[in-house]
Image 1 (cartoon, rainbow, N blue to C red):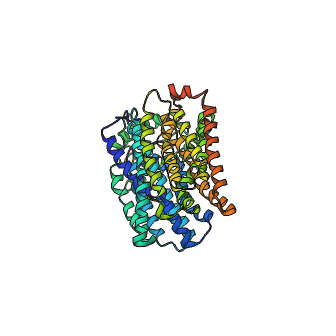
Image 2 (image 1 turned 120 degrees about the vertical axis):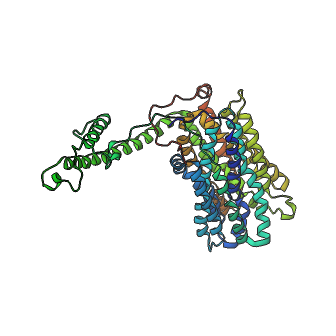
Image 3 (image 1 turned 135 degrees about the vertical axis):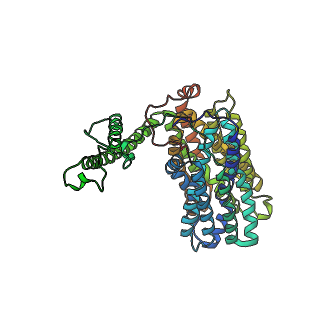
Length: 502
């Protein structure tokens, strides 16, 4: 399917505007879940590791389902997926207000909200990449800033709502706010496709208006169409009898209509077999293409890196509030929530890094590796922070450099090419989801075992830095080719394609 050249503007800015608010509304609560995490610890009185699963599932399920999300956007288009996901996110938040135990939250907040966020993220990134090419870094930076703005606003908002209406009332209100995603989804108009030659439909689709004679199993479509036209001509001249009220049909003799009907049944069986065969080939091609992606050493390194980065880089944003509590920092001494600081700086980081990625002299892979190393060093410093000021500096540093999410799609596109972006991005996001699901519980289990976060954050920082160094080591000889030209498109037809209509 061929689409128009990305306009780098026009309706694309409406798409950016809508995508910004979609990520703001869907990711605001899950990324500021640290505020809710403290409340759930007191209400359900479960261990830190067990309670941490709620927030980690909300962040990880959508990423784990990335191949499904990519397939959904490819099949149905961004607009229907966005509209459906608005009800999924809102419903999960509202149901969470009635949660009787932590296990119910695993489903309502973890699974429903997480899956909805994953679908919305894939939809917004895919449609934005279609509308922008030269300004892709800026566009991705703006829309990904929506989740960061949501983080610091929801961190304060949820805290205020809990103090006024309680935890249940807070979840009901933010669930109602999430329904506004529906209005934004209506604006997600797909990029028009270029005119293509109209394909001739199989002759079976013209029955019963026309009759088909099929003589041989290996007869080609073109021959079938010729026979179809010939049969229609014969029918018009009265050579083919109708199925009812015809003298020849009542005589009990094999008529031309019987032959046509029998051949149509054979053709239908053949079409079913061909359909099954084509589906099998599509699945085999998909797995073959997946293997080919991993033969690209930079892509393989990205896969390992994203797994380690999410295991080590996600817990600080989730658990900093509890870290402050564990080192006996009074709430009165915390001028603003640490999650608020992290969210503000993440928004700034996404925008700044997105703009930097658009400069021709900037190698986005090296920029991405630099942000990973800086994040890892900041996480390693968490055990040494014993005051609110030091934790605030760390929160700001981690927030700014984890804004590299805005350039990650850019790096992926430069590595595999735009034609393979949806396929490759779905795979990478799956393993990012594994990291998000494992990171916070691992940190929580370390605390439950040692009653300290020190070892946990040493582990997290090491994971992030190892992933960065591994990516840099593998990419040095190969990134030049990815920088100067994209991989040649494969002649195969991939099973994931962006839908042309919604």
